[in-house]
Length: 196
Image (spheres, rainbow, N blue to C red):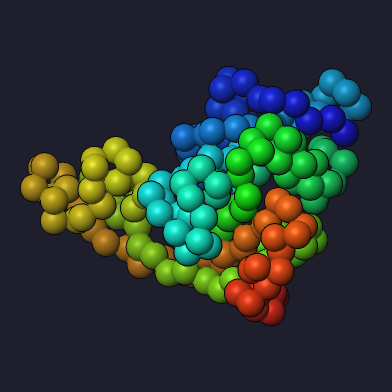
């Protein structure tokens, strides 16, 4: 298995074809995954996400924390956990200022974070959220906020859209310190892994 920097075209193709959201996020750094040196298997994408204060809970500065945004693979890769582990090593090398990675497993998709558990991430609990259905299309609040500058249903209604608030199931939250020496700083946040 080989990983290299991914083009925007590769990200778009992989996410639209192999990720359940079919939604391409604002990616800061993405890695293309190849089998046997040439068979394209998909991408692993990192970025700041839509949370403006992603670093604050960890006592870090903006730019020191990124979110694992998408693991969009076709299933032909050697091992998903191995691809993820290699991408974390490349992330550390390509972005030396990044200290911590945050990611979420979506329980609505029957995900509980097995890939994070297999690669030794720290499970910190779950977050609850809601989506908005705008003009008949379901959207995550963070996506809406980046498009409209707000995630307020009332404000979006005032722009002439029909809006319905939809409560979602929990998302399991995981963190991964890129430096082994930093891991002990976050161990106090650790909770038992959720099971399927």
